[in-house]
Length: 333
Image (tube, rainbow, N blue to C red):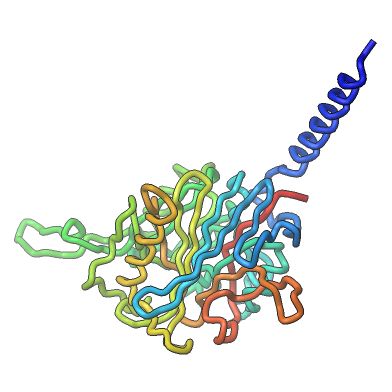
């Protein structure tokens, strides 16, 4: 015959098993090759104005000032690579190049926990290579931009397009120097054929800011497309470790006392923040669209105390309509 305390123990164990089973059921990965969105984040999981945490994802928001410029940074850990996703203003694969909405609206529509602006992929003349949720949308690689590749394990790598150092220059038999071309459409097609089964997302903006913990942007780096010497708003995404990421957005001269950052300063900031959040720093940090498009989106309390999606950087500057966002989803139903 069971004693009373044994009955209680059995009941407790049964309850624990049921709870564990329920949690396991809610953590099903999202489909990586579809437009599937995750469950809506629960208000109770926002444990403060700067932190979200549940069984599948944790997000911690940090604020700071660098080179007379305010920035906001999010440290993100997820349990499955399918939680790193993208969304467009009019469906992930919108063909309408004028389809744009505020980032906070897109984020709300897809139940993002945290999000940043993407690479403005609908600008087909400038965003030359695009893959979203395993679907290849565009390949016009012409050797002018770094490509960020994210595989189905959530790991970052790069196909470098822009010549950056002496190794990118070659001499012919007559001693004439020329720039060695970066990744072309043919190069990318060959890479795609060899790696398609493992590829998940491809972004075309750049440049790469940090690799193996150190900034790769020199003080004389010139890139007119991103206004490398311009003091402005900027956004980046970085991988810190397995299923561990960082997103950063800084303010610009449009916002109060802020100066804005050059691409060199922004890369230095990403290097610094990466080392503060992870022992080895950023495995790879990549620059996204900037200027008024630079946004980091998270839920915060409105004037009535209700949680709503909002732009967390340059809060005194209104949101610009975006074509696409990168976001992180929860799996907890």
